[in-house]
Image (cartoon, rainbow, N blue to C red; front, side):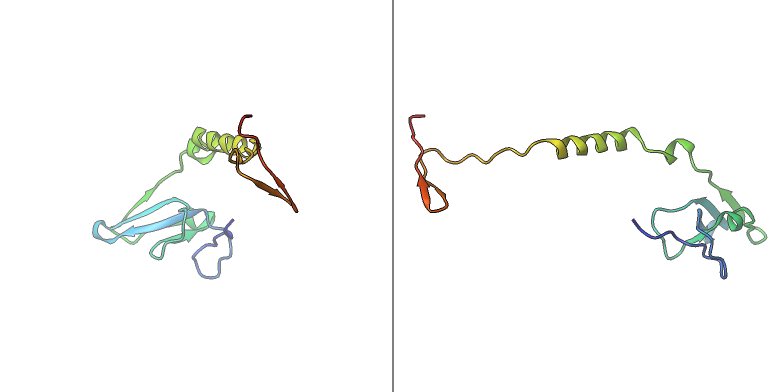
Length: 116
């Protein structure tokens, strides 16, 4: 698991909970849920700095609230987990030895009867 990301504001050591991005062409700042990965042109903010965010005059701030349903595991996640558990619990299938081929067991050789 990756370490917790911290707020990008100087002198703030709080855990980041939101990501701020800018679209300079449309003078828009977008504040949304914490991005999955840290991006070089995005700023991670703690709850306090995200709440107090103001944009320059003439800029629009869009605040994207996280979808509560998306915060928990999805049915796809649960199905994948169940499949992985079933696969891990399945006993390994023994390797079949070719019929009629000699097999070595230590210093002895075992010959299979091809009629069986």
